[in-house]
Length: 249
Image (cartoon, rainbow, N blue to C red; front, side, top):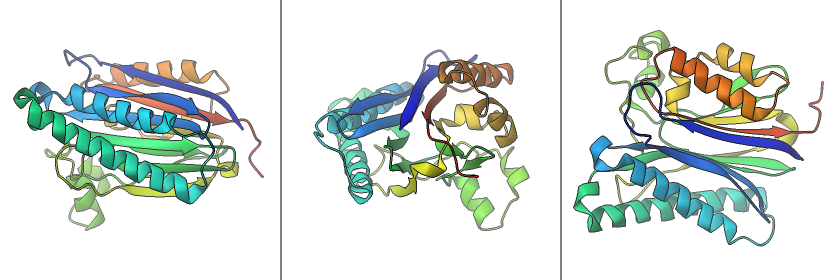
């Protein structure tokens, strides 16, 4: 079962406002964790991330019973599609919001399974009791360049076009959502986060924090503090879900 959860977002050290959004929401179907990283600056990236979060939360709260794993994947894909349509409609009605968009990652967490869906470069990691492992592939230009062998992972860290995402909510009429399911018995702690965190801390540094036997709220604060110590040029958001079962040896 789910032992505890935490969500925290921070404006960082440089930007004037926070374009990230998200949260952790409980319904009869289980626990839904969301992180959305708005894009567009003055084109209201904060509006896009807020709309994505609100639409997905509203859809989640409509559920009156648990979902199967396959139904959870379908739910997330449809929720992402509804959020995409909502952002596009809002931008059409409000010219000052034209061009806004948001990355999004969401996890449906139950005792039996955890289903993840994402668009963009916000990430999911799973700590299995021994190691923290990245679960998602970034939908970004540099990630594609790495996958195609045109640049190395090291070069990607400092690439001048590192922030260009290839998929987002609110930028196209149709959105392609990646989704997959993992048995919850293999998860000690799930972490989803915006790139304001993953761009600042290497996976080994993330693991040092996530494997601590502290309250998740304490770990979230520590992770954000460490990202800010590295410059905090971006907004930083993190959602953590800890499962109480022991991981098999």
